[in-house]
Amino acid sequence: MSSLKDYISVFNNSIPSDLQLIIKTLLAHNKKVYIVGGAVRDCLLGFPVKDFDIATNAKPTQIEELLNKAGIKTKPFGSRYGTVLAIVGKKAFHLSTFRQEQYSASNELSEVFFVDSLEEDLARRDFGINAIAFDPKEQKFIDKYEGFRDIQQKKISMIGDASRRLKEDGLRIIRLARFSSQFNLTIGQDLLSVISAIGKNASFRTQEALQKEFFKLLMLPDPQKGLHLLWDAEILSAIFPKIPFLRIGAEDVKSERILEKYNEIPSRNILVRLFGLLIFLSDKSSHSRDIWGFAGYDLGVSDMKQQKLDRIYQSWLDFPQAFDSRKLKRWIKSTGIKTSEDLIQLIFLYAELVEESELLMQRDQYLKESILILKNLYGEKSGV
Image (cartoon, rainbow, N blue to C red; front, side, top):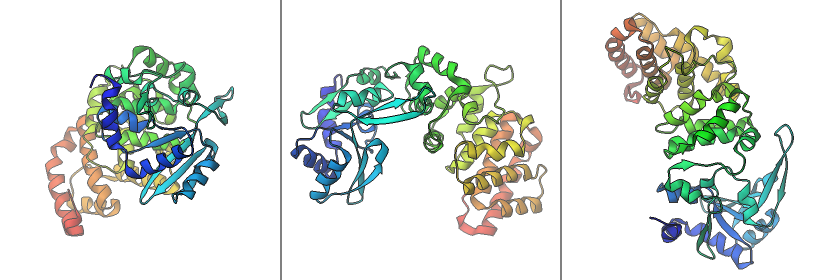
């Protein structure tokens, strides 16, 4: 499709009937209503549309009042940001009042204030591809920042001054990395230079948002492109300041091979994927419990998750380097069924990476025996 108009019927067909009811209710009371952000972006990129967000000139109290009168449940979701959650059946939709954000000299979000127009609201958004809105009343797309052009050219562009926007919140860099991987988009050299200049000095507004965004990247089917960006620009060092990351460009660091091996990790356990990333990309000679004891907390994980991360690291250390069936059985029992399955795969991928020939020579023996042990211990629950 060559123009935005070509996508109108496609996008209309993707709007759930529950959301159409919400839109009609607000429009019936002369409120301005637009669908913004990810739903529009994903449709134009040719991906399944899942998350629908509404931007409106109605204030939060008005949104709640109007929807409640129509029999639609609501609850405050982000009161500071003017966001209300509308619940219809088992579906929930975010509705937000047009707003602007003001930052302090130290890049802290100091004030959020409501504005009257969509144009003002779009100006605060991060990338052109995220600032395309759909007007369901006028049946048209609004693309003030040429996001559709970026989509056609498979690239990402910042809204406003890139250096200022990325320094305000380094989370935007993580999101850039995720989108580059998820949608196979190119980041221009000028923008890459800005990211590299920020590097280790990147700051993130909240750990909660950082954890959520970073985990989204790690759980992509192929996060290599985004991870390479974060590694090369030393953004990973801003997230995990105590981890001794290998330096891309060093003579013995083959970054593509390392990330390819990381991509082969079969586990969908986010803590195993996090541990694998930090192990694969860091200096083996500098690993210590002091370093790993802070890795999860740097992302703001719960005490329980940090304890699990600690146990993964301990199991990694305890893995028997010389094949012994009894030791392997004890290791599997102490590590647990799922974690042991994941870690065995991870251990041998890492052994390939660092060329641990003695361990690799025993791989078939380890894998065959681990299958037997797991089936004896856990029966058909084992999936090795």
